[in-house]
Length: 113
Image 1 (cartoon, helix red, strand yellow):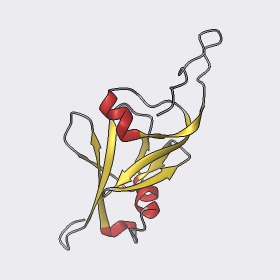
Image 2: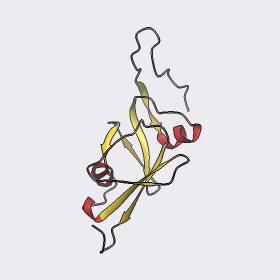
Image 3: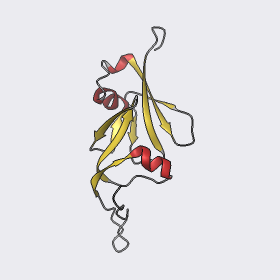
Image 4: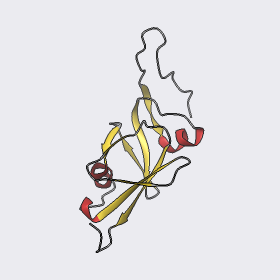
C-alpha cells in the first residue's frame, strides 16, 4: 500500500482527498479511520466492489452486488471488534466510519418483514 496522505492539512484544517482507492477492510484491521479518497473498496459476501461516494444506503450496496430486488435481502455490516448489525435498505452509512470491515447479504426468509 502506498504511503497514506495526511487526513487533515494542519494549516487550514481541510481534509485532504487521497487520489487512490482505499480498502476499508485494511483500515479496519489497522484500527484507523478511512480518509476521504477517490474510491472505497468494500466486500459484499466476500466479493470486492468499489464505490466513489463515501455515503451509501443499504439498498445501493445490495444493488451494486446485483442482489435484486433489494427487498428480498437482509444486509448486515461488520465493524471491527463488534458483532454484525443489520443495515436498513434506506439507512445511510458513511464508509469512512471507523472499523467497517465488510458487508453480508442474506436472502430474506419467507416469514421476515
